[in-house]
Amino acid sequence: MVETTHPGNIGATARVMANMGLSELCLVSPRSFPDPAATARAAGADHILEQVKKYETLERAVADCGCVIGATARRRSLAWPLLDSEQAAARLVSESQSTPCALVFGTEASGLSNAHLDLCHAHLRIDVNEAFPSLNVATAVAVMAYEFRKQSGHPLPLVTDQKARENTMMKMGEFDQLIKHLERVLHHTAFLAGPRIRLVRKLRRLLLQGVQSTQEINILRGVLTSLEHALGVSPKDKPENKKTPT
Amino acid sequence: MVETTHPGNIGATARVMANMGLSELCLVSPRSFPDPAATARAAGADHILEQVKKYETLERAVADCGCVIGATARRRSLAWPLLDSEQAAARLVSESQSTPCALVFGTEASGLSNAHLDLCHAHLRIDVNEAFPSLNVATAVAVMAYEFRKQSGHPLPLVTDQKARENTMMKMGEFDQLIKHLERVLHHTAFLAGPRIRLVRKLRRLLLQGVQSTQEINILRGVLTSLEHALGVSPKDKPENKKTPT
Image (cartoon, rainbow over all chains, first blue to last red; front, side, top):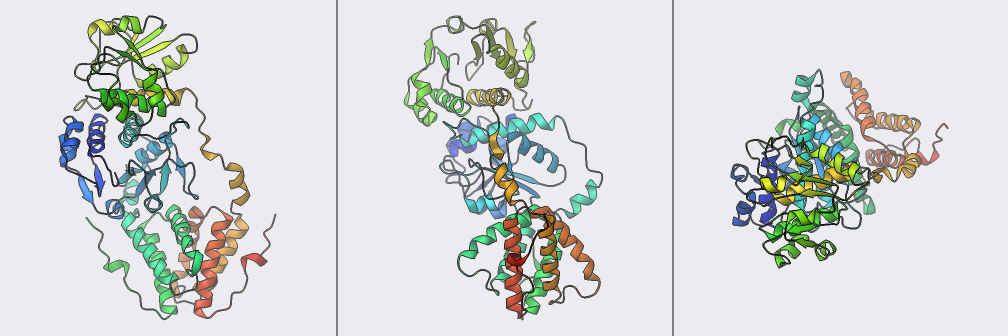
């Protein structure tokens, strides 16, 4: 949950997560937590509140995730894949067999920002009545936790090279390093002059759709480092030096 | 809702009913309604609160209904049919085409009494985690309203821009030009020296997964052209000059 305003919604979320058998709640810059209102609305789901992980940025919160889905009320947002509740739950059920996954919900007033949505592999839009579309954030979590629980009952067949995949799945932290590296290289070209700076978002999206493994990240980092050498720029960080938060 | 204790739950119920396109809320002996806490949690679903019907007994509230389903946390209750969330929603969708239907939720503390459950045609038990089964009443309504909406066959017009998408879908010819352009740029770096030439295949694969539209191809071509300028190489072909086979 990102920048949640009302601690009561954090408590209600913890409660329905416990109801549906989920446990790992992460908060990014909540306005107030811990908070008596959260504890009250959790109605006994204290084990979830006690294990909450707090982060300052969404980037850090999802750094070890191989699949990040962000909830939005928008019908379309660039070319990000837009999933409905069933599709999103199916993807989470499937991906969570091999990698940590995150389902991200924004603030009560305005949801997730574009910058937050850019960190996601796909976006979720829960189908609602057009005339009254504003879902309470804990209600949105309830719907998804319910859908996830339903679909978890019918596990999808495992991919055969599951073990291999686990070891090599890209982590979001690695991906962020890649994008920062790409931006550094592009700053040595005329590409990022003027209005084109918006295009980095689109580059980010298409790379996020395409890149799946750490090996691929390293190939792209290798391309960027080669370009830096060719441009006469000294590389600032190397993949080997980078530590991912644990 | 029968003998609801917290008016906030009435408001939260009204809100999610509005979200999911439901409108008729009946209250049996609520402790406090109307109430500012209900109005606050309804978050604008005032039309539902204003049309609430209040009854003194559940018997009267469901008097005109041909199908009444009561929510319970119990696993069995004599010989009443016990439905899960999907079955209950399916029955309500089906029966509501020919008769008024009611879905009944009890008090926060103890749910529906045996006397209340006796008034129902069938009972509903939402599947929850045995270790933490106590669902908030508005959350239970949310789950059922969501399930009802799904089964009511509301079309999901998520891919409204299908036509637009067709017009901008990347063509494989464009993609091949992109890869050739990428190779040309990489030949001006040390990247393609030695065994690394095999990596172009992998770059191709990941770009193919990620790139979807002609616009994205053009962005990537722009990046490559900028790199060529920065490297002091003159671009050989520009996207504008290129003819794609039809």
